[in-house]
Length: 98
Image 1 (cartoon, rainbow, N blue to C red):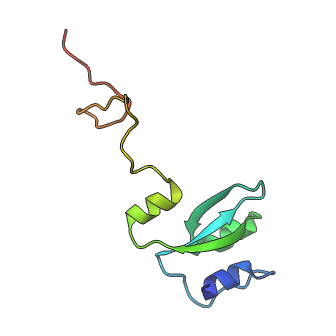
Image 2: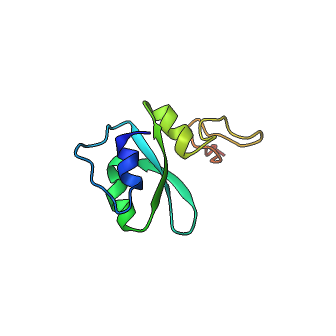
């Protein structure tokens, strides 16, 4: 547990004396119970909106960030999903000449 997590979970919120590292993320919980991953640097803003901090993660690269915020996003498309070579967009078919 980092000093940043301790500060974010204190009541009332205690502003840390340093900026959290760029690879430190918190799991925030909205008042309705939904959770999401966001930068630890935004903790003060989220806490003001009534969110709580329920955990922390260290994500060192974009792949680990993507896996944390959108599990399965790096997986190949489902069987039968068309992929256009023109746009490389799943589910979009390329136009064919008549």
